[in-house]
Amino acid sequence: MDSLLFFSSNSPVQEVIIPEVSDAGIQLYIKRDDLLHPGISGNKWRKLKYNIIDLKSSGKDGIITLGGAFSNHLHAVAVAGDHFGFHTIGIVRGEKPATLSTTLQSCEELGMKLYYITRSEYKKKLKSKEISDLINFHPNLVYIPEGGENEFAKRGCEEILTDLDFKPDYVCVACGTGTTLAGMLNTENLKSKIIGFPVLKGADKSLIENIESGLKVEQLKSAYQLISDYHFGGYAKFTDELLNFIINFEKSSQIPVEQVYTGKMMYGIIDLAKKGFFKKGSKILAIHTGGMQGRLPAL
Ligand SMILES: Cc1ncc(COP(=O)(O)O)c(C=O)c1O
Image (cartoon, rainbow, N blue to C red; front, side, top):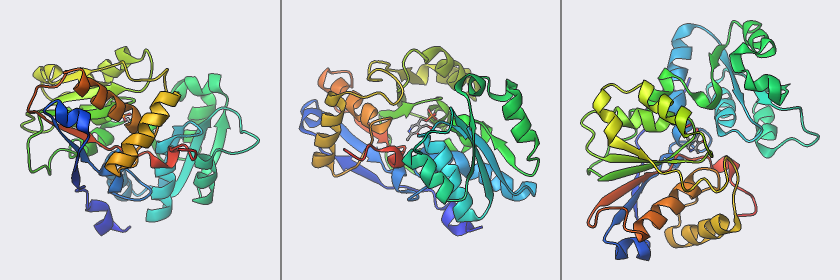
């Protein structure tokens, strides 16, 4: 395995000048985790790092995992398998479509073997006989849950804020399972408030459970806040307003984002800044969690 490339996990921080944000007396920075690797981008890099190190030492020869037809996680596992030379199997939610999504096409090209499971069966996850059979039939592969949500992933996300040379007042991140936010909450000597922007609608209860179940100290519960007003209808849903925002944001910042996670977070940050949510004089650090393979081609 190409370990040198793998262990370089510092990403640059860029200041972004957006007039509405500067007018509110706030400095906005973006941590470009999307630049960590062209294919294993953003929080996928963080989440897979210790999983792959574990795979190396376990003597097993690949990963079996789950995901939807547009899953960044599935795609990142396929890229990692291709890059580091291990087998990958993806269990995909839903029947095989007549035309594969670009994500699934790319997974296949990268050598990932795909199995399709009906949505009702997929929902049961490990309680599904079909899914558990597939996993049991491949004892040589390590199982990683959907979205890469496990303890190794959290551990990788604990490293996101460790190389900063300033202390942001707020750290902002888009949330799916909350694993990335939970990892950052465990940063030693955390001085920032972490603001999470859920991209799913109505899933805050399980998100909070997941975030709070792995905290190293109970008091960290007060170090984060979820702002659930920027999901734009739910997971992978978007509006023209969001797409127009992304186009304008990219023009002024020269930083590409996408419509599922990072675009929603940036919209939320700028809207909240305009509304006076952040203390005047504060520094905000937004985490670019990647996901660019899922960016709408029309954007
Ligand atoms: C690009 C991107 N950003 C953010 C997230 C949310 O991460 P988490 O599920 O750890 O909350 C994901 C999903 O893993 C993602 O693919």
